[in-house]
View 1 (cartoon, one colour):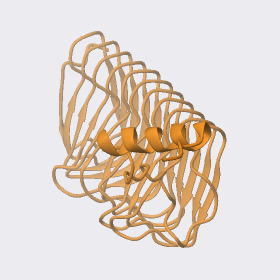
View 2 (tube, rainbow, N blue to C red):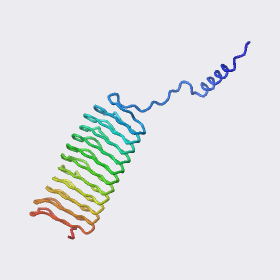
View 3 (tube, rainbow, N blue to C red):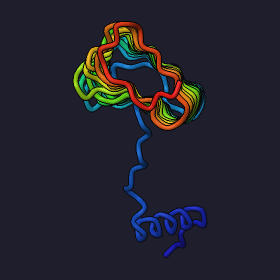
Length: 260
């Protein structure tokens, strides 16, 4: 019997060994893929991703890098932009929508209503803007963050995290709704507050509520400066520290822990 040529023999031995160890026939793990309706790439570098819409259960994972993600109409899925200075723009965000931008100086703009589960920007100097109404959770975490809601904050909590933060809310409505400055010297401005809570929490905070209807304004720890407009109802509590509380006349609520 003639011998097997050396090259063929080595190939045969290699194949036999791979089969024996169960390697042949295994498929490689597929890379993450964007939803079919979206264009762009998901990499650890700067990505540009555009989706006409995002359905419930669909996810964008743009990983690290300074990413730009645009969702033209409704966003019902999940956006994880990872670390980096990311820019996310979306139309209306419906009930299943989640946005997580991770570490970095991020911008999230909702050009309509945000009725999703949450917007979480992670640490960094972030900017979150909702041009319509907001009824989902917002947490901007650490950093000097800015939150602007042009419509009505209808439900759930909004937390600005540690850092010197800024918030401007047109209408804070619905019993149990709240805006929290958390740690840092925060500047919180609310045009109308109905049966809700505005809390500076820790730090020397500046709080201005123009129209307070059953609103609870809490300075928290630190030397705070609180102002409420005329005919305000509800409570003003400066909390710990040397606090200045100013209410336009007539003031129809109650005041406590205001030393100046």
